[in-house]
Every structure is written in structure tokens, then in C-alpha cells.
Length: 518
Picture 1 (spheres, rainbow, N blue to C red):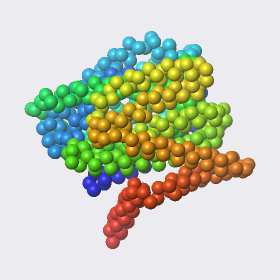
Picture 2 (picture 1 turned 30 degrees about the vertical axis):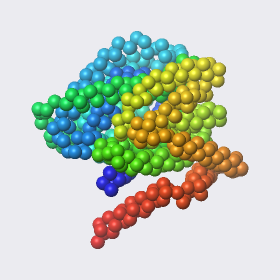
Picture 3 (picture 1 turned 120 degrees about the horizontal axis):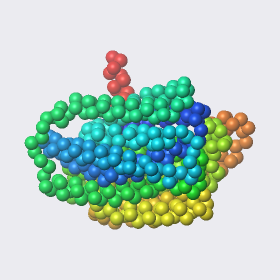
Picture 4 (picture 1 turned 45 degrees about the vertical axis):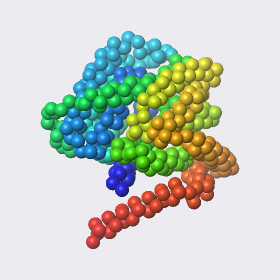
């Protein structure tokens, strides 16, 4: 129950924070486009992707170190925690310095990724400001990670979204008053630094022993395990970086910077939804890690049952969200920014399909990170990344924007979608993954049926008022997929588990409210 309570608190805080962050981001994007042009938006996406590639230098130390912290945190081994945190600190300071040097040396080459040089002054200064904003966080990451691994992600979340909200307010004011993109980026750097300082001070207060010197070195066995996991995570980071961070680069090179700007609006929507839904899985990662650290071969069935429930929830939220993105993206962007920022329906369908396929991996990836099963599929990302680059470039030349994302879908289907659950079932649950395959196909068929049915009913609407039509479409998207899923699963064990969990949360909140008013 303690794990469940921590997970609920983590998710609730993250959900509220992410919802506020999305709201302020949408307003900020409107102000951005009214005061600056599409090319600035494209430049944002391009430089962000370049710096994501540089983060490959991190070598996957974060997830590997996080996994190493679960067991000492579960057993309250303070001396081992101190030793690991000291090692973590040294590693990240070194990484921050290396990324700073590489970012500086890359300065003459960033223009290679521009189809044509945009009419934006101070391009090199803008690039350096992006670099500085990224580098700052590496010097504080280790303390944030301890809080998260200790099942207190909600603390880091409050700081994260609190500073993010204030940053956006400040950036909006700067754009309205000055239309100065340089000042816009300086504000971002200031708040990134302030947030990291604040979370560092909070960590020192929560864990006073971090300020003490550690006299115990990390054991040889732990060091070997960390190195093995770092190597495996390096492979995963290469694959993830190429698949997730080259879309904008290929778009910019083969379609144009304006396409990157248009796509950034769709990406803002899918990324916002993904961030909210990801909080479900991020909020339980530490609890699953804690469960796995205390797990024996005799109670593997309990761990597998937990996974089955998470996979069911994974399907429900991503099936529903995919339906909403497919039907509502264009009407929403048209209302938000205007019809000049729209892709055609085929491109939107491909973006939605990519969102769904990637989203359905969440439960398997969460358990891989929590159980430390990085090493078993270490070569998978290499094949994934090669397939992605080749397919995306070939299809981008033939199909334009849609081809870039079709390449990503092809690489995911040919590698990740079956390798990740296979590894999880074979090495963690120690059984066949046939049950997973059956459920994945069933869930996907139902998600497609929900999209088709909702899309048909939406096409029957004949409301001339644009805003009222959008509201009606929202209501149909909210109702039809969830009703279909409810009819199919309301008697199942997994659905009943989440209903009882919801009832218990409501009862506890009601009891707490009642006590506070006595």
C-alpha cells in the first residue's frame, strides 16, 4: 500500500503540473508566433535536436545509476547511497564539461542541417545559448535522481513545473514587450539554473547525509554491474537519439525549415499528451524498482501481474489519446493558430500511428528500467537506428513529411515492438511472451475500431459554427472510445482492480476532507 500511495501521489502531482504546463505552453506558442515567425520555431526544434544528439555523451549513466540506487534505498543502506551519489556527482560533472567542449567545437557545422540560411540574426549566439541551457542541468542531475529513486518524484515535479510556469510567464512578457528572441533564451537559462539550485538545496535538506564525506567506496560487484548497464544504455541512447531526434533534421534537410515549424505544433500536442500519460509510468517506476529489489523467484508471479495491469492501463490511455489526436489535431490547430499551420490528413494519420506504437511500449520500457534489464537487448537500438535513418530518408524523398514518420514506424515495428516484451518475459518473468502478443493485437484492433467508429460519427456532424463543432467532436472523442473499451473490459480482473483503486482513493480523500472540517 505504501508503494501504491507513493505512486498515486507522484502521478497526481505530475498530472496537475503537466496540465498547467501544457496550458501555459499553448498560450506561450500563440505569443511566440505573433511576435516571431515560423523560422524561429523551426530553429527551436533544430537546435534542440542537435543538443539531444550531444547528450549521447551521457552514456546512459542516469538509468544505470538509478537502478543501482533502488536496492540500497529499499534496505536503507546510507553508506552505499553516499558512495553511489559521490560517483554519480563526479560522472555528471565530467559529462557536463565534455558536452560543453563538443558543443563549442560543433559551432562551425550546425549550418549543415539548414536547407537554407534563415533570415535570423545572431544565429551562432542563439546556438550557444541553447548549449548553455542544456549544459547547466548536468551539474545537478544526481541529487534530483536520488529524490526520484526514493519514490518521491512528486517533490522534483513540484519544482520542475513551478519554475516552468514562471519561466513561460516571463518569456511571454519579454516577447510582448521586446520581440527579442535572445532575451527569450536568456530567461530560459536563468530559470533552468534557478530550478536546479532549488532542487539541489531541497535534496540536501531531505538527505542531510549527502553533505557528509563518504569513506566507503563502491563495491567491485556494483561497479561491474554499473559499467555493464552503462554500456547497454549507451546502445539504447544511440537508438533513441537517432529515432527521436533526427526527424527534425531530416525534415529540415529534405523538406525545409518551414515544415519543421509546422510539425513543431503537432509535436507540441503529441509531446504534451505523451508527457501527461508518461507520468503514469514514471510515477510507478521507483515502486516497481523497489518491488523488484526485494523480489525472489517465488514471487515473480506478483511482478508479472503488476505488469499485466500496467499494460492494460497502457492500452486504454494510449488507445483513447490516439483517437483524440487523429480527430482533433487539425481542428484544434486551426482554432489555435490558423489553417496555414495544418498538415493534410494522411500526415496526421501517420503522426498519430507513430504516437500510438511508441506509446504502447511504455509499460515494457518502464519494467525494463525498473528491473535493470538493459543489457539483454543492447544491440536492438543499433538495428533500429539504421533502419530508421535509411527508411526515413528514402521515404522523405518520395513522400515528403509523411515519409519521415513512416520511416520511424517501420523501424519501431521491425525491432522494438517485439524485442522489448520478448526480453522482459524471457529474462525477468522467465516465460513465453505469447500472452503479451495476443493482448497487443487485441488492444490494437480495439483502438483502430474506436478511431474508425468515432471518425465516422464525427463526419456525420453538420454544425457550421467552428467552435461548437470542435466542442461536439471533443465530446464524441471523450465518449465513444471509452464506452467501447468499457463494454469490452468491464468484467475483467484488470478493469475491476483500477475501479477498486479509484474507489479507495476517493474514500481516502473524502475521509481526509471530512477530518479537516471537524
